[in-house]
Length: 160
Length: 288
Image 1 (spheres, chains in turn cyan, brown):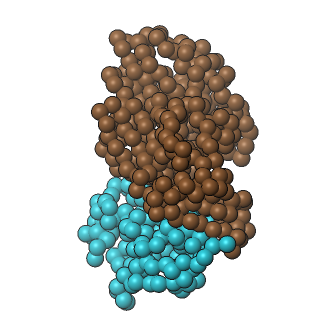
Image 2: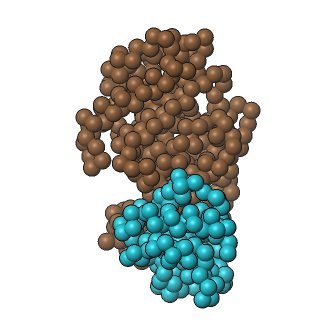
Image 3: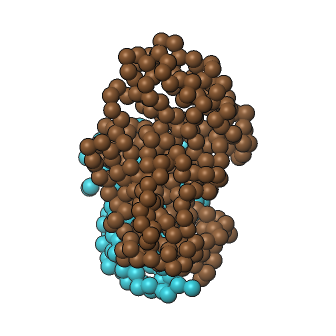
């Protein structure tokens, strides 16, 4: 039986302190302790990417991270992409290009697309597909998602 | 459903020495965890028998890629992304870069580690065939000391390894190929990303005066462990590129592997496709 730990993380720019089981999944701490329910659980196997968040600047499957490994981490979830009411350029493009249908994969897609464009501001279609390869979508057929990401790149990148 | 959280414990020792001391005190009790990309999947599926985990992810002693004149030494915590991003790996071990690229997708590659890929001991892992092809060695560590084993002797049976209950894989040492080299890697899966291999073949050959002077072939998903194709290698070694005994090598390859039927492919499919990959590899080699 494990002692609870005092977990400190910076989530979407805000310092958070919560007392949690050290083996709790980062996904559950985000959703249940921090009430950030934008991040979804799809498969729970690291296959679908619905739970994708940025941890210390890299995409991770939050369903596969025991939270003790996120001690001190800087985490960005889908809630951290917009600035107040102003959507990020990637979110805007997903709206414009109908990159979301049922929406369940969308939080993970947005995080992976943002990460891709930060690393690679002018991706080829192949690089877009590689960057989003860990995010499964059963509705769109991916074409509209790739269109959206391509449009952000053409329009000057994810930083806006 | 998922494993029962209240049953679980995870310790994060501040140093390698303390991690090893805990493993020595209670051998077999603590399951080492690095990126968690295998262990957490099994936990989430409710099939994880282990409940006590040893978090290695912050141990500086197990991190980093060190370049020496004749080899590269990879800390066990080297991630697939580290492999993809390292110039020296691209330069000397292109098969390792390819292995890393086809393991899961980015989120897995950012967390999963080379040491974990080895110690998880899945026959379907994607880096072991490349490590076999390059003649890698492992540095194993315990509070009793360090020892080195050739990687092609490390896997002893399905999920059985030459690794004591108090030992960790510390580093993976891969000798740099010299001379005129040929590198081949191909994984056959259901799709490009996020697929587990049906068959995987990695090869490294050194050529001298149009002759195969050195050859190692590593195979995945066709035996209880990652395996070398020793019979096929023996048949091809010393042969001129202009007259490689392709059919005989394909025949010999069948005695190197013992595939099974499972959810990903049948044994028959694996026998045929492994032979096809060897054939493709040898055609590319002959055209060098």
